[in-house]
Image (cartoon, rainbow, N blue to C red; front, side, top):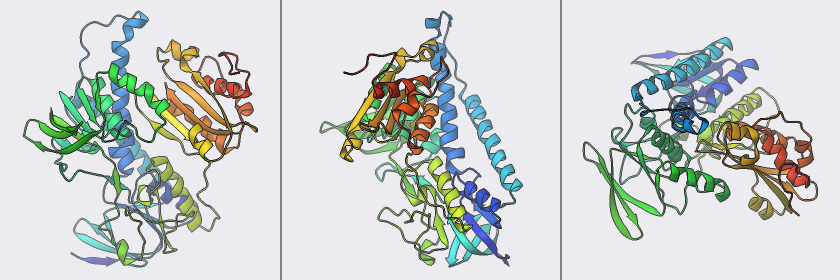
Length: 472
């Protein structure tokens, strides 16, 4: 193995995911000489093994649902819908490849040097990067750590990448499982379980707490629970998984429910119980970076670590493990390094769950607002009263606006229903801009469209809703 001394760089970014590649581009735009290194693919987990491939599979599975329910529109569909899983995966991979190539083009266009290799921090301002059979030494002025997170496994049932799988393998299956057992009722397990149920799999979700989507407003999850039942998905809560084994053709999952141990057999078991920071084996201890009790990197509101020339963004820095949060932090870190007075400062973070139907929310729920000392007023408008939702035969759910009672300032918005993953953006902007319910109610929304319920709910807050009876 040979060593080659590399000339100094202004900024070294380790990790080319949603935070890393954005940080690299922004810093290059601001005049920095940037090197971006990653041992895997451009785009990181979100693009290659998370957000994008999962949403592609969800979209494909949703088409099946629409086909099966087309009779209600007078469109007669006879026979079974055949799912060619290898072709579905090929289509999904095509989307990923197109986006990956797009990122590569953007990085090149902005003058970012991209290196495919594994970085190790040996001392302050120095990193060794293993590139195939050689090592290169980099000296950097500033460092951005965008090293992401990893799926958490179970000690009693470790991943084997064959039958006991993480979300990574679940996104690559070449067949529709006969029975998919999902351990964990959070958003990842729920999204993938729902998709495979629509593809035709029997799905059982085992959740250790008393509800799926723990931490999400129960009013939002009611509709999702009803749809899961309609899809034939079995949800078992307060289910304590004791372990499991791959027998070759199936997985036996041992679970304790109501004090009794059961064995649930499936041909695959997706373990989705959370993620952990990818902070090991990179040499953080050699440069003085401080971790918290969960091994996330500690940062301030400028994304700086305890070491002032070292920054951390995205999943490895804790907080909400969201791709859009990582991208936001990436821009902040790049701007701080470039001398700008940027800080992490958001009033509202959008949260989206691609369940059936979708869930989206931002800001405070009514309960949270009251706990924070606000006197509130809220209004909920159902999609059943929205012409566009009815015309696309997808009218389950609602939009709720929570506002401060006296000023009518928007504090939070909760949605469950069709396309709310897109609708939430307007709500985020309203909170960020300090808008009140009157601002939303006076904003003309095109008709007939799905965003109208946000305007209608805002009118309800003002007490003059047209298309629903106002609260007295």
